[in-house]
View 1 (cartoon, one colour):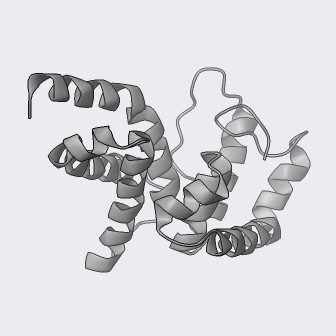
View 2 (cartoon, helix red, strand yellow; view 1 turned 30 degrees about the horizontal axis):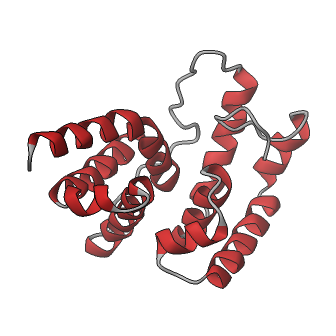
Length: 181
């Protein structure tokens, strides 16, 4: 790889690392798995950086790699996870205890969704991608995105813990972007 391509890759990683890790965390539910997953996707992106950097949307290209790597980890071997009653969330600047509790409720509810529904919900509503962008990322039709989103949202609405959190928070569950979903 030439020096200017390496510089472009480094700049991309510096700029996109936090969002890619956040997306991976929402897909995996575990910070360590999320960081490993992001590293794996970025290593694959590095190997084909010429192709990735020439695409019209390199971030979407790498995000698709991230989702594919996440699917691969379940195909290759079932990853054993140790679930706890309370996820080990760490408060960030400006986070109130209620927001942390709400996020924990949301993450536990997301963890109950099947992988495909979870990926659609995360990409569509957390990452705020269009249906066609989600379909492109997941390699499926927009109809599949719509049906998986509808099923995933129905399961989230039926989750008692999430319903309790939404009832206690004015405006609903707060996301990391500060909005309500």
